Length: 160
Image (cartoon, helix red, strand yellow):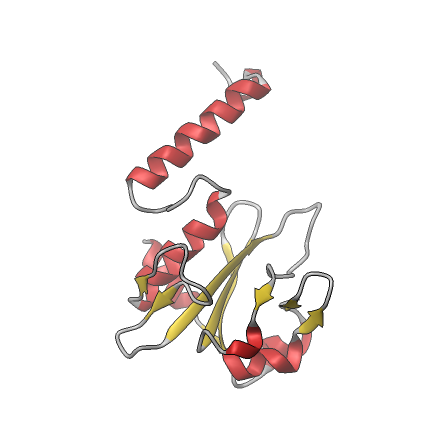
């Protein structure tokens, strides 16, 4: 059977099976869209972080040196090239020390992977009261800020 011959229900069942298998392999930790879990798993491997429980507020992984890292992923497509990350909640509480953001293309190839210190985010993120969070878009000046570290090669190496 060709993939284009599958029904919508079959596609959804296939996605559920794939998510279950990724979970059994330790790649994803929830049954949500796997991008976030995959990104957390990938970054943790690359930076040798210990992933925290999904309920841990403010950060996703912690380094051997105690660095608390919030991890965000964004997938772009030909129909949606937005590089806006999901909401950064409670920024002012300083629950994390750095943010790692990974931007993928449609085929999950990494376009950018950045390590952004907590203090840098305020210079580029916009607070939006209606979501009660800071919103960060990874384009423009932040990509050239010397305080932001490109870690793309480190992330890509961990994929091999």
